[in-house]
Each structure stands twice: as C-alpha cells, then as structure tokens.
Length: 374
Ligand SMILES: [Zn+2]
Image 1: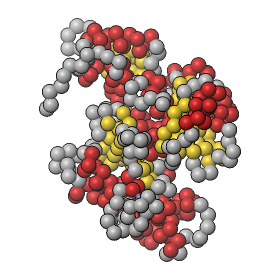
Image 2 (image 1 turned 30 degrees about the vertical axis):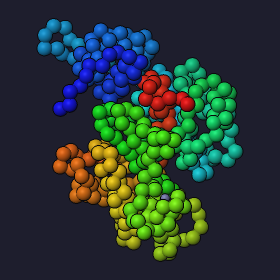
Image 3 (image 1 turned 180 degrees about the vertical axis):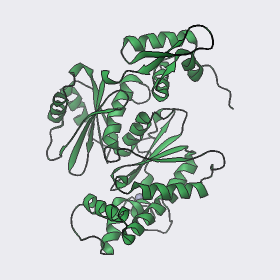
Image 4 (image 1 turned 120 degrees about the horizontal axis):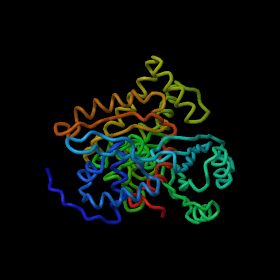
C-alpha cells in the first residue's frame, strides 16, 4: 500500500471531512481522523464548526472497546437545498434535493419560452422551501456552453449562485453523491441519451478537462474507417449506440413508423425489447455491444472501479445494456484480475441529470473546493 502523508489542516480539510461523513453515512471522530489523516484536534475543530453551521449533527453513539461510547456524526439532510434544472428537448425538469441528495420536490414543465427566474420562484415557493435555505441553482443540458452573461444575470435576479454544467457530468456527480460512493473510488457514469456522454469523479471531484469538455464518450471511435461523424472523426460510438442511432436503425428496418420524436420512438423499441420482441431486443443488444467496446476503452484508460449506467436511454431497457457491459468487461477489462469493475443501473435514469444538478449545488455549498461557481 502506498505511504500516505499526514495532511495539514487546510482550506480543503472541511470539504474532505464532509465528503467522508457523506460516504460513511455515520462515523465517529476517531474514524474520521483515521480516514482523512487529519489530527484529532483538527477534526474536533472542523466538526464543531460543521455542527454550528447545521451541516452535520451528532446521532447516537457506537460502543467503544474501552471508556465512554463514541458519538456518531451524520449529514443533516433537510436543512439546506440545491435546485437543479435539466433542459430537455421539449421539457424542463426541476428538482430540489437536500444535503444527502434526497429529492424533496420535482416538476416537469414544457420548455417553451420558460423564464428561468420565474420558474425558479414558482418551483421553490410551491415547495415552501425557505428562501434562506436555498443554496443555489444549477442548470444542465446537453450543451454546457450556456451564455455566461445570461447566467450572471440570472444569479443577480435570483440572489443565489447559478452553476451551469453538461448533463452527463452532472448525472455522474449526482450518482456519486446519492449512492454515497467513497472518494477513494475511481467512479464514472455513462449517460445514454440522444447522444452519449460520460462523467468522471476522481477524489470526490468532477473531472472537467481543459475546457469543461471531458467525458465525450460518444466521440470515442470504435472503428477507424467506420461511419463518419459530424465531429470530424469516423466510427464514433454515438453513431452506433445512441438513442438517435438506434431509432435510425429501427426506422431503416421498418420496426417503428417514421415521424415522432426520437424519445418516443426509442421508448417504443425499448418496451418491445423487454416485452420479448426479438427484433427490438437484437437492435438494443447490438447497440449495447458497440457501447461496451467504447466503455471498456474508457475503463482501461482511467482504471475505473465503479460505473453507473444512466440517462433516458436506460430508463426502460437498461438491463440489456448492463448485462452486455458486465459480460464484456469481465472478459476484456485490463484490470479485471486486480479488482472488480462494478456496473450498476441508475435508480432514476430520466431525472439523473436534474438530481445531479441539485447535488452539484449541494456539494459546492457544503464541500467547497470540489466544484466551484465559475
Ligand atoms: Zn464524433
């Protein structure tokens, strides 16, 4: 095992302590010191401040081998809230989450010409969330290059920080936060939608790359002379395994009628596949096979230990993708003899990006240093 230096208590220590309590559910001060490497006095000071700020609280106690029982610490969930807005093709999904990422409110409205500031007011007052307890708003969508001026204007109007992130990255952070994944894990998520994205969380932080463009799994090529992609490359997995690619193939085979939205057509194929339709199953299984090749490359490149499949593309027939991916990784992942590569399915795949957006706000609020309001 690698030697670990004892870190000095610094600006990142509070975030570290919060993150370890989050993933542990309940933990004693002694265990916190052991897991963070911080000294007992540092832990005592940070814990005292976090209790005073209502971020954590003492909850019961655990037995001790000698002397008095140790008090356990846990995150105080329903004290502050993050709001997440997910921009879909035609709808806006609004989610409010508490400090553990638990959903306390959800609404889906037509996107139309929605005024986001008005929507925020309507949503939060409808839930009766106290204004002083709302830590911010994060807006996520397939395109993360939202207008910075618009965001600053919105933050000024709402009086809370506003964060913008792409949907796949937000979904990864949401799964990381709500599943209580330990920061020691190399964690990733695959976000299957009209395109394909990935989110990566290392050391408790979203990995964003040089220009917030990390995780473009959809443009990982699986065939050097494969189908041309608008990005300029050939054989991008998105051209074979995205919802759009599946619907395109189904229409070519006359499995679904022309017209209608990609989402509606894809869901019809997915329902048929899980309902025993052999042709629909074959189509999704083939897409899952293509996706598995790309995901294995990502797992190998980054030595990931745990993956979650999420996004609207796995809402109905996610088990087809998960099964295929587990089989492929078990046969081909480079690190398979050293550690397991766990593949899980999201519990709320359609809302994962909205929940992740709310979790981004929560993380930025109580464990700052991992992500910031730029
Ligand atoms: Zn491409």
